[in-house]
Each structure stands twice: as structure tokens, then as C-alpha cells.
Image (cartoon, rainbow, N blue to C red):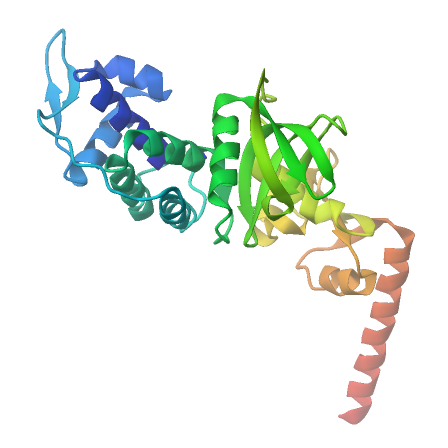
Amino acid sequence: MSRPATRVLSLLEILQDRGLVPADELARRLDVDARAVRRYVTALREMDIPVESVRGRYGGYRLAYGVRLPPLMLGDEEAVAVAVALATAGEREKTGEPSPTDRALVKLNRILPASLRQRVTALIAATSATTGPLTPEPHLALTLAEAVHSRRTVRIEHTRGARDVDPYGLVVHARAWYLVGHDHLRDAVRMFRLDRIGGAAELSRQFTPPSGFDPVAHVLHTLTLGAWTHRTEVWLDTDLETARNHLPATFGDLYSCADGGVILISGAEDLPAMARILTGLPWRFTVRNPPTLVTALAEHVTALAQAVARSQSAL
């Protein structure tokens, strides 16, 4: 999960382990610039975690001496439940300042036992959410999250049979948890609902995830197109930015046309319903596929024309 909480947690871990750490080393290890390091240090201070700045050639940042709290005695299930509730409480965050839920996550992690703190941090970093989830089975979620973090293949016991998967990430959408990764059995990227996985075991085999792969985008794309009977293609007389601002992400994929306009690739189970949605859009449009959607659109237009005629005669 690309969010401020993950990097603030990492910063706190580094300072607890190392003592005085140069600012440029922190920036390099967190993969951010010096300004971001200062923001994260400020965030820790605002949480009443005293981070000292040491100036000079051998300066940097360190925790004040004696800053250690006794561990918070939470079991695995309790820690996962709290971390999940906090990590998925708000919208996805890519940049910017830590949110209130981010700060709460940092405080929680600070007082967990070291072994559990590392596992919960891996769960937070590996998980993205689009809405509030149902809490998964704790051991399964932690095992998969550790495999995402360590980039190790897992063997999952799925309702459709055991298989080896290279786990790219965990995604929470519409109150369901999904594991997204490369399925060795199908030799393809697939997603698996966690409530259909009976167990998982991390294997010794390591993998390299594809560059730039977004597990959230894959889940939304699969649920948009893969779950429907009909694949639709419609040209919209607008620009890409306007279309993205107007249409929800689950409505379909949008692509700019070289000759102007936007192509909407979507899925539909009910073509008449799709025709009604299209006529409600604020732009001109042209159906390119399938022909049956054109038929459904014509029937809808006929029904509208009949309604207009009835309304005019009633006036």
C-alpha cells in the first residue's frame, strides 16, 4: 500500500534499530526526498514521539534516549482486527500528509511486540482497500501478506483445488478480500477471494513482480469486464480527463482516440439497462460493439419517442 503510514512506520523502525541516522540515508531507504523525510519526522513529533535533530557533518535524526514503551498485549486476531479497521478506514492515499488513521496505525505499531509488529506492518503495506472490509482469517491474511512482502510463492488451498501463486498484493473491495498474483496452474494473473482459500503456506521459491503492476486496477478491471456476459465498446464525444471525472472506476476502461474522443470498454449483463445508462450520459456517443447493444438502444429510443407522443397528446 503506497501510503504515508507505511513510510512513517518504516522511519520509526529505522530510528529504533539504529539510533542516529543521517537524513540522506533515511531518504534513500524510504525512497523519498529530504523534504518528505522532514514531513515524516514532523508527523512522528506530532504523535508525541520525540525525534531529535542533530546538526553538523555527522548529524541526522534519532529518537530521544529512553523512548521505549512496554509492548501492548494483543493476540494475532486482535492485532489484525485493529490494523485492518484502521488501514481500510479511509480512501486510498498515494501522497500527502499522514491521515488520522495513518497516525493511529503508527501508534499501534509502536507498542506491539516486535515479532507481531513486523507481521502487522507487512499486512498494512501489502493491502489496498476501496471500501470497508470483512475481517479475514488472521493467520491466512498474515501469511499471504508476508509472502507479498518477501516476494515468495505461496501454495494456497482453494475451493477449486490447490495451486502455487506468486502473490502481488491483497486488495479489499466491496467488503471482500482478494489475493492477486500469478497462478502457476493457469500461467496467468488471477485473483482469489480469501474466503475461498482454506489455508496457505509460504514456499522457498522467490519471484519478481511485473514492473508497475497495480493489484487494485487488476481487481477493478476483472470485476468490470470479466464478470459480465457482454463486452461493450462505445465512443464518447469528450476528453479522457472529463470522462474519468464523470464515470466511476468500475464502469469500464477508458482510452483516448487518436482522432478525438474516448473509447469506453465495459461489460454488461443487461443490454437494455446499458442502453438506458448511455442515453443518460452528457455527451454524444456511438456504439461500436456489440450489434445487440445497438438493437437495445433503438428499442429504448422507440420507447422514449412513444412516451413523448403520449405526453404531448395528454397536454
